[in-house]
Image 1: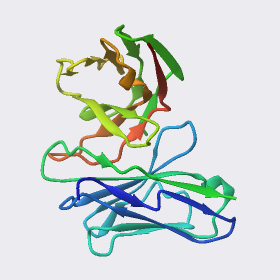
Image 2: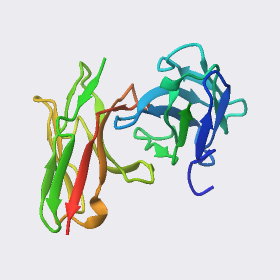
Image 3: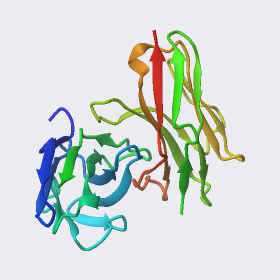
Length: 115
Length: 118
């Protein structure tokens, strides 16, 4: 594809529900990142995948958050028992790992609203 | 842990004028990258300019340039000949460079909203 895509663009859910957010990286990009951006703030790192494995999940706030990338391409961020504080824009980015500098290309994000 | 601070929540500039956005950071690393990203209302994060810490020369990309002061841990962005399309939220970001290839986690500042007046 031309760029990183994320679906859905917007998601409204009720407190306590389960949600899945999808990220389609640029074809051939082995690295994939998830960030969370609260209103009026900068993005905060959640998790980084190299291929299929999570190389760093230190940014996941608690065990309600989980992400997978089973085939090393598409990734899904899963949030269980959503809380109002989970409301934010969830950004995904991808990059190659072939050079000393690897630009991260961002998707347009999914705006999650928990009522 | 690395931190990035942008002390200007909002800035404004007249079209065709010059504006400087400030950023400071804290790290114990010696090898890292610094970035400025632009985020318009569409939410798409766009890379504006990057600076490698080991390079003393300040990076320049057309109307965008940086003033990188490594000892002071300062990294400001200058936008010359401002255009209406420059209006957006701007984020300063840091990434350490692990070994021969860069490890990707970005640490962002809080952002500066730039308004361009016609």
